[in-house]
Amino acid sequence: MFQQVSDAVISRAILREFSKWLEDYITSDVIIVGGGPSGLMAARDLAKEGFKTLIIEGNNYLGGGFWIGGYLMNALTFRAPSEKILEEVKIPYKEVQEGLFVSDAPNACSKLISAAYDTGAKVLNMTRFDDVVYRDKRVEGTVINWAPISALPKQVRSLDPISLESKVVIDATGHDASVCRSLAKRNILKLADFGPMDANASEDLVVEKTCEIHPGLIITGMAVSTAYGIPRMGPTFGGMLVSGRKAAEIAMKILSGETKKEPSVKEELTI
Ligand code: 48F
Image (spheres, rainbow, N blue to C red):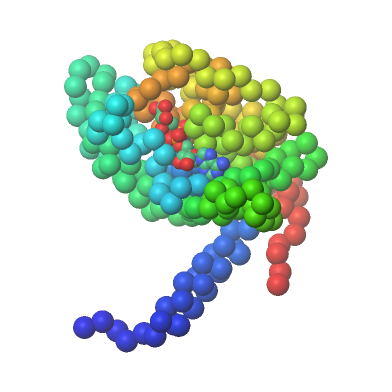
């Protein structure tokens, strides 16, 4: 029934394809760390505008907290006006009261992942952000390693990572704010911690404070709440999508300014 192909040929196809595109993405316009709703939304908007966009995700799967709603219940809530984004990315929803919308979580999550892929974003999954590439007081990329390495016993964990360069990095790592933390531990940045629950206050504030927090580094989603001490918001997701969109817009402004300057990525890898 199936085409005859040897096992060696299958292995070669995997290796060749992976190494070809990884080599290409050693430099990109934007690296988004974290493939939850805010990171996926930013990736979708950036790739749609033709920017070379790479998502780094520590898990095997994308989606972060977008796979399920509160208390393990399969319903995600969104408040107006974020239903407009649901329509754009073709996520079905229903209005349960004026301005409050509900979607089926696995369907919404898989549609957002598809939307990011369909516009051309690339993904390195099972890959953990380890550190920033930092030159001239500017974030210019990420240091990464295979995610399983962090689970190894300490005596064998000192396995060197590699670096990827980009003109902009977006921290979309949720409450961890992993990229910001790598600057905070060197006193380059000061982080607060997220406050107790208040969805009404939090959603607006997360969007308002989505910004370029340090030259070359943009924050989005719940990383914003960790960085600025904003209340947590629980299982409502419109703010994640709108914050991701704002992060993409900020990145595009930086990138369009950069086209006039020398690219910050100084040399391509040639083997
Ligand atoms: O947590 P997450 O979904 O972040 P988000 O986009 O959305 C938050 C909501 O899901 C929810 C909420 C608001 O409604 O409270 O929690 O802000 O996704 C973050 C992603 O980043 C990955 C992590 O596995 C997850 O998929 N991540 C975190 N740290 C790292 C990482 C790291 N060091 N390296 C790679 N990926």
